[in-house]
Length: 86
Image 1 (cartoon, rainbow, N blue to C red):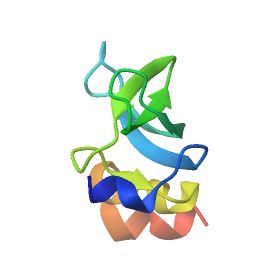
Image 2: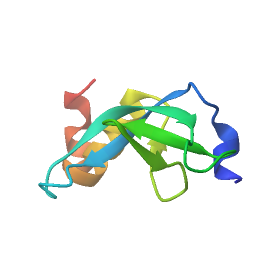
Image 3: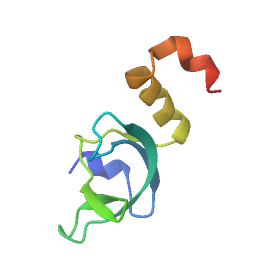
Image 4: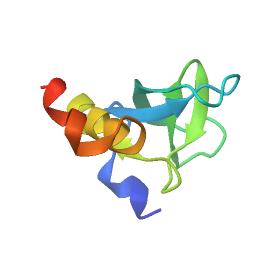
């Protein structure tokens, strides 16, 4: 899978994770890129003791700051709040 080629098992990445029990709650979470135990040869994200497919349907960020900027652009009001974080 082309998307997975930019990652390797052991990488630490950041994702915006929505709480499955409270859909209006989301936050930036650290996740590990691991070998997918259910799909040999593929990679997965390991987050909250669960494996998630590593594909283009999940926004993955290389740094926490990059993920936080995307989070605030999507959920926190955009550019006007940007200066408050950094």
